[in-house]
Length: 288
Image (cartoon, rainbow, N blue to C red; front, side, top):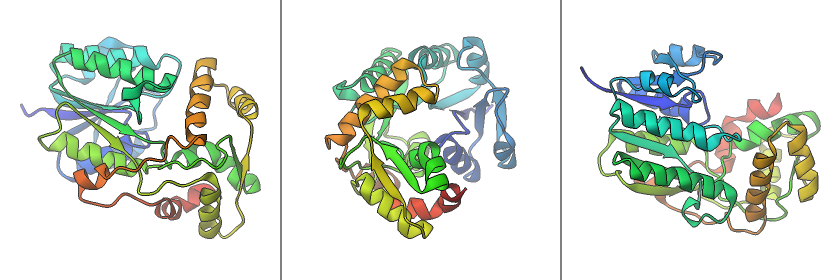
């Protein structure tokens, strides 16, 4: 029986477009979902959905039955590492051949907590003897929708402690495109790919682009680290996640997230999305 590709995190920013690409190009793709997940979009693609809980090793093993390759994106939560370890152990036990992990930009340097978490998971993957590939993207453009569209819609502003720091934000659709090629082509085993967008931009430039696209003045309000901490706590984030986010913001603010790579183009043959293209495609999400 032919083996398939399993996408863990199939309803996410990267997982959904990846699953769509695999399905539309004729690959046997399965989506691991929680029982509470809205799966209508996946089923509309004709994708088989399998209930699996990242906290439940045996449910993951069951989802990986007759699976050759696994892509996984684990949510950034306080038990991020144990959840990831469950995926790796289940892949070993189930006889998966190739694991593809969404990691983080600069994970190899372990300069901040988030990088250290990602690198510890990468090391565990390297110990297994399985084929593996690490995708190390910079911050997602979609984060402006996920975290800032509320205040942009309500009062035309967004709040971050990034000062004038420039970041080479990447569209999650480009990450999905890279993942598609990694999963369907040879030559990616043992590789770690640093993924960025085509330009490094500041939050002031983000605001200017959104102003032009949305047709109304959008303002970037720079805030202090302590103000940001309070906002994140009020969102209900675990203290460890708050600290990790603030460390990442500090790197952004200091300009350490501005490097640009050509990896997206090298692997996919296409230029990555600019922030303006992203903003136009997601215009309705900012206008809600």
